[in-house]
Length: 90
Image (cartoon, rainbow, N blue to C red):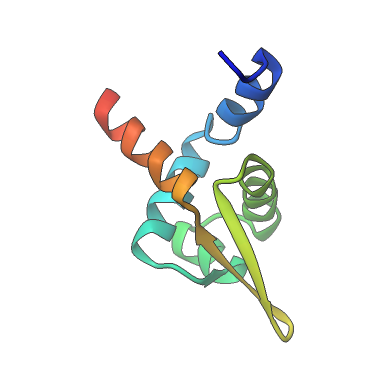
């Protein structure tokens, strides 16, 4: 195994939460969503959504793209792979 156990743990923590999985699912269907739209759609606090997005971006599951004052979020190939994996184990 090329990756250290620490790296694997960091990746797993990136999706080890039901809200993060919901966000991945949402972004797979609606790419380029703003943080406000994500929070509103999932009926969660803006700060909570921000924290989840930050952790997923750190793990490489979500990328951010700024357009003026709005930041758009998009699921990455890695995030889509995790989502597909999760669907196989449920």
